[in-house]
Structures are given as C-alpha cells and as structure tokens.
Amino acid sequence: MNPQIDEHGQFRHLLTMQGLSADNIHSILDRAESFVSSPGSGPRTSAELKGRTIVNLFFEASTRTRSAFELAGKRLSADVLNMDVATSSTSKGETLLDTLKTLEAMDVDMFIVRHHASGAAQFIANQVRPGVAVLNAGDGRHAHPTQALLDVFTIRRHKPDFASLSVAIVGDILHSRVARSEIRALRALGVRDLRVIGPSTLLPSGLAELGAQPETDMDRGIEGADVIIMLRLQKERMSGHFLPSADEFYQRYGLTQSRLAGARADALVMHPGPINRGVEIESRVADGPQSVILQQVNHGVAVRMAIMSMILGQSGARR
Image 1 (tube, rainbow, N blue to C red):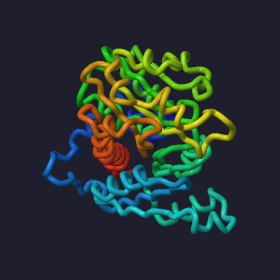
Image 2: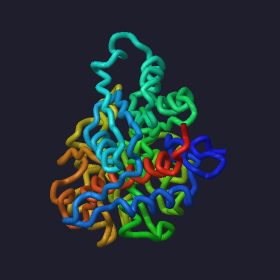
Image 3: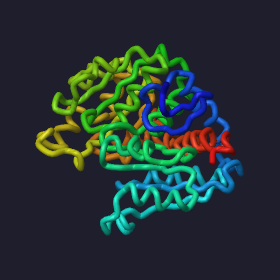
C-alpha cells in the first residue's frame, strides 16, 4: 500500500508522485477545479480548514512555492505559520526532530516542508505523530509533487487527452526534482511520447526505465511536441563543470521563437520558474501567446488548496 494514502483511499501525506495512480492524480485535479478563480472574480475562499494550523517549514529559500502554500492555507481559513529557519532554534543547534516535536506540541495539523536533502520530507512524515500531515514542497533532487500536479493541471485544462500528447522536458534534468516528479505524473496519466532534452552532462542515467526518451539535440527533441516544459539551470546544485557557459547553453538549448516553430503550432510553453531569460528561454516566447507560465502560477494556489482540503478537510476527527 502507498504510505501516502490510508486504508480508506484518503491522502495522509503528499511526499512524491511515485506510486500515485491516474485516479489519485485526477482526484486532486478535479478538486482543484473548484478553487480556480475566474478572471476578475477575485480568489476563491473556503472556511473548511478554520481552526487548523499549518506550518511552512522551509530550509531552502523560496518565493513562489512558499507564497502559494501560504495563500492556499489562508484561503482555506487555516492558521498559517511561516518558520524562518535561518533564525529558528535549528540555527542554534536544536535538531530537526526536536523542532518538529516542539511545533507538534502546539497542535500543528500539517507541515509544508522544503529541504535541501533528498528524503527529508519522508523522514519528517515518519516522525510526526498520527494525524499530522506532511506535504513535500521540494526535497533535494528527489521530488516536487505539487509542482508536477499544477503543471499537469495546466496541461489538462488545454489538452486533456494525455495519451495523445508529445511532451518535451528541456534543460537541467540531472538536478531537477521537478523533472522527476513530472515524468512520474505524466507517465501515470498515460503520456507515451515523453522526451527529456539537454546536454549529456545534465541527463541522468535511468531515464528510459522511468519511461522517458533522452535526447541531446534540442531541435529534434521538440519536433512536433504538444507541450514544452523548460527547466531552470540549477547552478546552486552543481558541483563541477556541467556546462561550458550559459551563453552556449542558450545557443543549443534555449527556447527561441525560431526554435519553437519546430513544435506544433498550438504547443504549450511552460516553465516552473523562476525564469532565466536569455538562458533557458527568449522573452518573446516567455511572454508570447503560447506561454502558460502565469497560468501555472495561478493554478499552483488552486492545486495546493485542493491537496490541503483533501487531507485535512475530509478528516475532521484526525486528532
């Protein structure tokens, strides 16, 4: 049984896309539809998590993800605490486990965890008491499930027949937890033509076993693609020389308007952000008519609201 899901089929945690079925994923996406706001209508809100306490426990810097989780919790009427780990007791020598137990004693219902170490979210989920949920907001190179979910949610709203899609993920695959989670999500949803594109130094082994086709030629890789997902070069995770230069990367793998012409005419252009213009993507493409990058940001709040409500809103007797 998937440890993220209880014996009744309800989510206990969200730590990884691994092991989630198409039905599991679609249940989250369907719930997210109810939280998407229409243009000009203002944000959707709900009182279903009133009285619940959610802690954003971020050990890595983040703007988009942390803000989206904070907004999601507040729009569900939860009490949201943002922990500044740099000034918390962990910087004074307190262990992560002691920090968790201290916060648990304050009747915390859910931890949102971002950590530089792969497996940190799973470790925390193994340590919390029954009834406390953990959502993985990104752990090392391992997983970023909510980013993958908001991306497939965005794709589904435009191109719902996943089995017919050709999807290309481009860039720093080696260091990307987003890429790993997206490959698992897209494969679970039935995408058969899934390509991962980048220089050989940034393509990890084992991609074929995950169901993705590695490709080092950008033009060949995006030919006829329905969806192109660009990734950021994660220089902070690189220890060594993976690239000659950012300029050369852009020349070979940057998504320019002329290069985009090789994909389908209605191909979606995506990027989890933050965008490095002129390194991964040309501004005319990032801001162009095929870009759904800002939609991804908007959908990120709705998807995280859906996950929070499915875990805490359906389980009033968790404690």
